[in-house]
Image 1 (tube, one colour):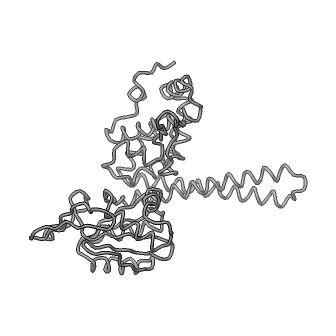
Image 2: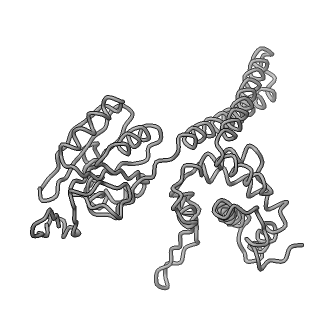
Image 3: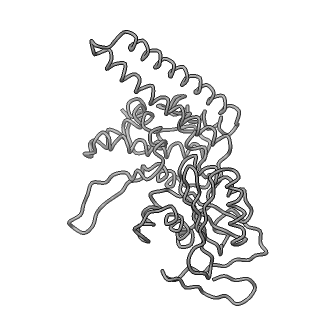
Length: 368
């Protein structure tokens, strides 16, 4: 229902009844999705070079589609075109790393536009219910349909310092993986009698150079954290948890600093992809539970080493880890459960400002 001072009318679509919407044009638009009802729904399929856009207006059939460059000037043209379609626009796009980040920031700054940044797996499953073809135009139309039909959760813009720390921590992780690969190559080369000395020397120099870059960037990351009071406070809180050192604290804070402060701990767990998935139906389907993995793989990876160290050296985490194994959980399943509990602990100390206390996280367990 689109209401502007007169009688309201319900709008029917070929795919079902559209939920009733109400828009008051005199009221300034808020970024909080619950307070806003929009009559223009847009979807943007983001690629490295282009933005495929589809717009569906309330009361009209079909989509208006256009393509823009994925650049600063293209973002300006996109915003102007969207606002020509209506003075209140809801836009959905997929989270595709750096390619979607800049356009999301530009849209969030524009008055009259609110943006949702969606998990690609969620969008893909929704799109499969609409069509079989996969093109940029079809993906944009599916995203516009998502904006219209599904619950709209507006994206909360992370702080600049949080975004910079995330980029820095992920680059350090990439270099760490490169360092491991160079080490594996060096080990294989040393095991062969046919490897020339010059190759061995080059592999050693390359590996050492990456190690120096990692150390330099890690120092820069810690320095950036110290410049922001909120990040510095959280960094110290993370370092107070047994199993989390400077390296893990940088990685975890880089992924957690940009999260919406209104998120619950269950949403944190779902964002990490550590939420359990159960497959039970009737008496014939009873599959083993697993984690969804429908979330931030960088955050899951950052939690692995702290969970492993905590399960060995923190008495409360170790007691929980051993208890799960007595309940016939594998070591990996128990470790994942520890990582999930650890994420709960981080959420708690961030919210309350209190130091980590394993006895509060595992109150019923007896430590050795």
